[in-house]
Length: 76
Image 1: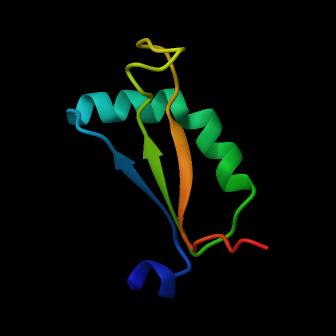
Image 2: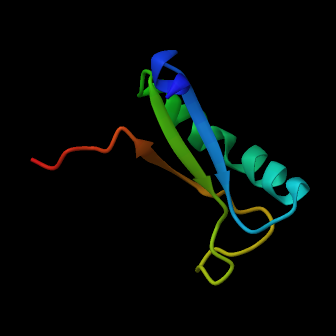
Image 3: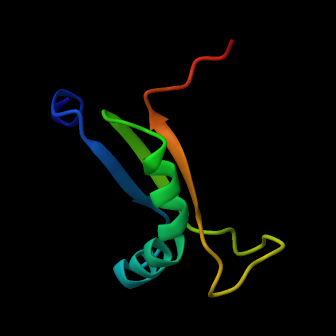
């Protein structure tokens, strides 16, 4: 995969939403994303999810979550 060969740090926006909604979520989640990226070097792929609409802190100003997708973390 080219992203791995280039040692890239790639983010994938996930969710059944318009481009504008995904972009809004990305902006709200930026502090979490920057903290996540500061702890990891490439290559890596992470998914940026929208907040759950049924979650306890649901609302238009709630940040989403970010999860590592590649490489998979090994369990001890």
